[in-house]
Length: 349
Image (cartoon, rainbow, N blue to C red; front, side, top):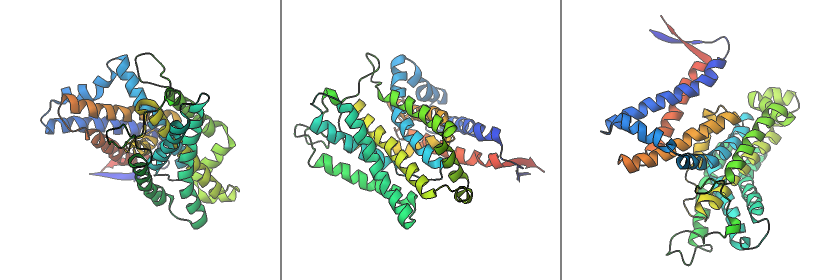
């Protein structure tokens, strides 16, 4: 019968192979789900995984969806490397969108560097929201997991107050939304005829910067040490409180920038549904990408495929669009299950 045997050292091959195995198991399980729902699994695979890639326009939409996911994920990965568990990127995303919207509504029709100010405001908003968890963690030793998570619900109520109250569009037929942004407050598109915009460039720059941070800088080295062993970090004179602040502020700033990119990009206004679960999905992306910047980029593309595939399945197969969340959950479940093989090997006796 099979049993688990502890490996002498962690398997490096399984460390990077387990996400691939998890993805394959997710796809197989997804095909079984389509069969249980009475749908042709082959047709389901074509609609869910191939339709979003069938043309340049569809690929541009995939990249557009992956952009805020990748921006959030790289910020979270930096914190997770330092053992700082920021689970509230969704709230930081929303607050970043609120701050950027304030600039767009009150200064969006003024010539100048409106987008630059919106970027700075979005990053400041996300970092401010994350700083609440950082302060409580370093001052009172509270759990950053619980604090950052609870602040998500506060952020959702805050954005609802704005779009139902002072920022509500008087010409919006009573919908909870702000006025549409002026042209100076919208991100320019990269190609004619598609919606992919400059935020994609932000994501590429951040992924490269994350790689440089971890591979070439002293700060990245200190964050890795703090994440692997608190005792070793203290012995080396590395301040864990400082790493907590850096991890949370960087994660919050990236999430806030993603929120700015969302309202200044395809949406063009602030609504009460601005969050869309991107902050929570970014947690899965960070772990599927092995907290590696390149891995986060690839995992963001996969997660974007799940989002768009769910929409395609709803349109062409008549299943609920929430099936994309089923795929997300399956991916995380299989990743956690297969990760056991990093430290253990299966023996048959």
